[in-house]
Structures are given as structure tokens and as C-alpha cells.
Length: 188
Image (cartoon, rainbow, N blue to C red; front, side):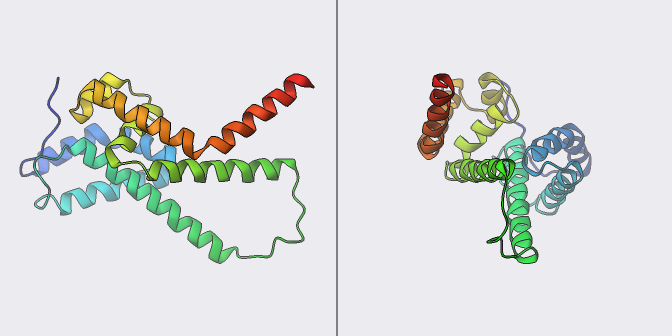
């Protein structure tokens, strides 16, 4: 098993190497949250700037990859939270008299489901959430995740099991609704 990247006094050439080897992958990861390439790149650049500024304070035992992915994810979630606050303040209007069509109801249901998924994921322990996101959002195999995080494949499987159980519990009312609609369509 390959040892995770460790930092011991991050100097300029090592930092540049980290940036070149991880920036594109981190941007793709961030785009899954913010759905905008420019914003994703900006958030990833800020993570690297922060890494450079705090390089002396970093724990040398911490995996840089893990730090980078966690930092990017947190920046993305903060960005989304701030955007939601901004939109609600700027676009605060009375929607009581507006009629919504079927597509609008679907969009609201999808947004609600996404919020529930984000809430369920944010309630997971950090390592468990990271394993789930690497598996589902980055399409990494359990073995790749184990290597990248320097943990056993069994630990990856345990984290995934815990994450899926939590998501099933948190989203059970949606699953029941999907089953009911499916049965209704079969009967019809």
C-alpha cells in the first residue's frame, strides 16, 4: 500500500508540484458541488492559497490529499450556503399568488431532495463522508480510496455501509414515495 503524501516543511517546489498534480482533480470535485467551472477553480485556488499561508502550522502527520479534498468540500458548502443566504435576501418576494406548473413542483422536490441529501451527508463523521463522496462523486473504487486515505479496504467498506445506512434512514420518506409512484405506474 502506498504511503499517503505527507508534508514536512512544504517548500515552493513541493507546493508547485502539489498544485500541478491535484488542481484539476480538485476542480472536477468542486464542480460537483457548485456546478460552475469558474467558481470551482476560484474555490480551489483559495484552498491552495490557504495551504501556502498555513504551511508552517499544518500537522505533518495529516495527509495532504485528505486535507485538500476536505478543504475544497468545505469551501464549496460555505459558498453554497452564502449564495443561498444572498438569494433569499435579494430575491425576497411574496410567492403566494404565483401558480406553479408540474415542472416547478418537480424542481422544488428535487431541490428539497438535494437539501436532504446534503444534510444527511453533513451529519456523517468526516472520514465516513469523505469515503462516500470519493466513491459516489469521484467514482473511485474502494481499493483506490483505501490507498489514497491510507486506510484498509475493510475500513472503506465499513464507512460506506454506515453512510448508506444513514442516507437510507434520512431519505426513507422519499424512497417510499418513489415505490408508491412506481407501483401506481405499473397498475395504470
